[in-house]
Length: 355
Image 1 (tube, rainbow, N blue to C red):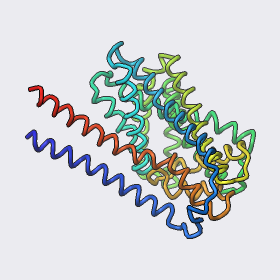
Image 2: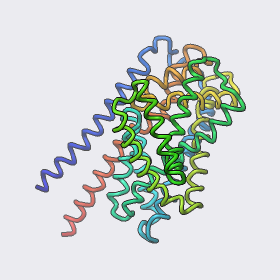
Image 3: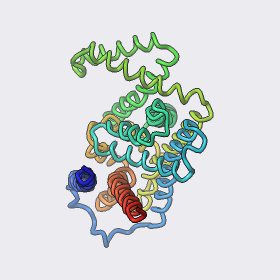
Image 4: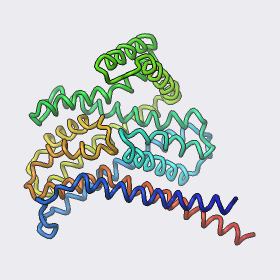
């Protein structure tokens, strides 16, 4: 039985590595198949030093994401449950595996379940909090994006002039707002929120997006109620919830700054404010895209930004941007599984040697 278990673990690890490699190859072919106009790499004049601030933005952003989990895990467990090293390792795995599953599943539906499982299997975090932590992290990110996007849209106007993209960006913003509004509403105004949910689902049923209205209403009400119950655990600690939202706000701002440095690195002529506004608008527009990691859709809409470059450079700029936004996660995800497997094998070998 032990041998069968080890074989199963090896096969699962190999499967994740091969599956992720397949996702990378398939996505790259899909996204960059039309690269005939790409300049030869040797001919590309890259201001390499401008890639450094892009990389620093990414590192700071992902560190803040870890920080959110470290704060929530530390404040949700008994003192000494985790050492400082253990809590950061757990936060790293939880964030990166959540992003990995977000990127390989349609509409990013796999991230939170993977994170809940990762936290729950430690056995040291209260069961309710293993759900509350990933859910609040997601909702705090959506709230932070709204806090950035709404002023950009209202007071600055959207820099791109396409009516389709403007309309799609506003629709995306509504999708961003849905869960935070529903969860907060359920916590403080349960009856009006239930009526609002009913109205939204009835409208979606009329325009044929939802087939079974009653079933959909029940499902959404149950999910919102569950989210609200979980999030209440953390909102009782205002310093924790406030700190998480603040970190999400800075994290969102840093991530939305990366396209500017990528553009400038390839010689693009654009102001930071205009590029930031465009990025926020495009991020809103692709939010509800049903493809894994928004692949395909993201490239089409982000072309609005990268088209500022000469034709030959667009391909390479998009490739660098997708490295920060997408490829890093689907490369690191299986490496975490492989590292965990090798670590486990080393421990088993050490225990056998000591016996």
